[in-house]
Amino acid sequence: MTVIAEKDCSTIVQPDAGRSSISSSMACPVASETKLTILLISLLALVVLLAQFILRDYDNNRLLSWQWIMNQHDLLMIILFSAIGFVVVYKSCYLRIPISREVIVLVVGSYFVGMATWSAPEFMVDTGRYFAHAKLIATHGLGYFLSEWGYGINAWTDMPLASVIYGALFYVFGESRLAVQIANTCLFSGSIYLTYLLGKELWDARTGVIAAWLLLAIPFLHVQASQMLVDVPAMFFSVLAIVLSIKAAKSQGNGWLLLASAAIVFALLTKYSVWIALTPIAVLPFALKDCDRAEILRRLSLLALVTGVLLVFVFYVHHPVLLKQLKILLDYQLPALQRWQESYASTFFYQIHPFVTLAALASIVFAIRKKELMYLIPAFALGLMLVIGVYRARYLIIVFPLLTLVAAFGIRQIKDIMIRRFIARSAVAVSLAVTLVANMNFLQSTSAVNLKDASHYLNTLDAQHIVVIVMPQPGTAVNPLISVPLLDYYTDKPLFVTDSVSIPDSRNNVSKVISPLRFTWEVDQYPYPIVDATSLSTQPVIVVISGESEQSLSGAVTDALRHYPHKKTFTVNDGVFRFQTVITVYHKTVYHKKNTSRSELTL
Image (cartoon, rainbow, N blue to C red; front, side, top):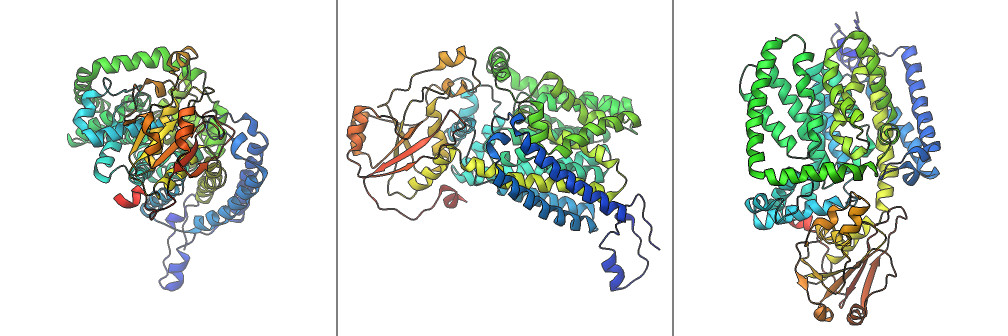
C-alpha cells in the first residue's frame, strides 16, 4: 500500500522489495489536477514575462533596467530557455531526493550560477575604492591599513571588513581577480545554505529549502555574486549572525554565544545598514516557539553584553572616524541617494522574479490567519527597510534572504509538494534565463568591458610597466581617476600615472548637486607613482583613458604619442551611462608574449 500525506512524496511507503519497487520509489505519482495546475503555472510564468517586457518602461533600476537590457530577440530566447527549463524542472519535481542532498545540489548549483557571471566586467566604480584599499593592505600590511583607515586612507562611509577580506586575498594570492571571484561566489553559495538553515530553525527543513531556491530566483543578485563589492559579504554575515543568534538563544552552552557575538560584529563591520538586517535578533524573545521566554531574554542579554563590549572597543579605537562617517551619511549620503532612487516596482517585479514577491505578499495573509509569531523574525527587518524607504535594489540585498523566507512561508501553505516545488524552481529557471541572456549581454556591452579587454591586451605586451593618461570627463560627476584602480584590477603590469593632464577637481561642484559619487573625489591621491610628462616619449606603453573615441589630447601628449607606431582602441559605448571608459593603447613594438593573466599566474 502507498501512503501519501499532503501529497508529499517523501512519505511514500513501498513495502515490495526488488528492482521495480526501488525504481518506482524514485518518482512521485502526480494527479491529473496537479499536472493541470503545473501547466497553468507555466503559462502564467510566460505571461508574466510578456507583461514585464511590455511594461518595461516602469523599470527604473539604475544598473539593469529592462528598458536597456531587453529587446524582442532576447525575450524570445528567454521564453525558449524558460520553456526548456520548465520541462527540466517538471521532471526534477518527480524525483525523491533527501533534503540533505537537495541542499547540496542548491549550494553547488548556486556556485555555478555565480561562475556564469565571472566574465562580466566590474560594473560599479565602487570597486576601484575596494581595490585601492586591498592593494594597500597587501603592500603595507593590515596594521598600517587599520591605523590609517579614516585618516591617511579615505574611508568614505565604508566599514573596513570587506576591504580586509580582499586585502588578505591579495596578500596570499597576489592581486588576483579570480581569487576575489572565488571567495565572493563562495559567500553567495554560503548565503544560500544559511537561508536554508534559517528556514529550518524557524519552521522546518522544507520551508528552508524553498527559501534557498527562491534566493536563486533573483537575477539582480546573480550578477552581484562575484563583484568586488561589499553587498554579498554583508548579506552572508547578516544571515549568519541571525542563524547563530537563534542557536545561542536556544542552546545552553556559551560556545554559540561567542560565535553569534563574533558574527554580529563581523556583520556590523561590513556596512552601516546591516543593523537593520540584524533587528530580527531583537524579536527572538517574542517570536520563538516552545522556548522559555525568560531564559531566551537572559541569553540574549548576555549576547548583547558580549557584543556590546566588542563594539565599544571598536568605537573607542575609531570613534573620530565613525562619527565623521555618520555625519556624512546623515548630512550628505542620505539626501544624495534620495535623488538617485529606484522604485519598489522595479526591484520587486523586475529585478526579483514576481513569483517571489507575490508569494511574500500572500504570506502576510497566511501569517495573520495562523497568528504565526515566528513570521515576525524575517518580516521585521524587511518591513523596516520598506518603511524607512530604502529603494535601491543594491541596498536591499542584505535582506533578500529574509524576503525569500517570508515568500517560502507563503508557498509552504500549498499542500501539494509538486506544486510547491514547481513554483520555486520555475522561478529559478526564468531568472537564470534572464541573467544569462539579458543581464550578461547588457553588461558585456557597457564601456566597463573596455577596461577588462584592454588589460588583457596589455598583459600580452612585452613591457615591464604601463603609463596611464586619464582624460577629464566634464559631463559626469565621476572622478575619471577612479578608472586607474579599475584597470589595475585586471592587469598584471605595474601602473604609473602622468601629470600631463589636469583633472579639474569637481568636489565642490559635486557636493552642490549632492551626488552619491562624490567619494571618487574624496581620495586625495590614488596610490600610483607619477611619471613626469617630459619622459612620455620614452615609455614602452601608454594607455589613454577618455570619455569618447575622438577626445582631443593636449599638444604635449600628442607630440609624445607620435613616437608610437602601434595603437589599439577599445571603444565599446553602452549609450546609457554618462561615465564612459574608452581605452587607447599606444606601444612601440608589436611583439606579444604568451597571454597569461594575473589570475593564472597566482592560482
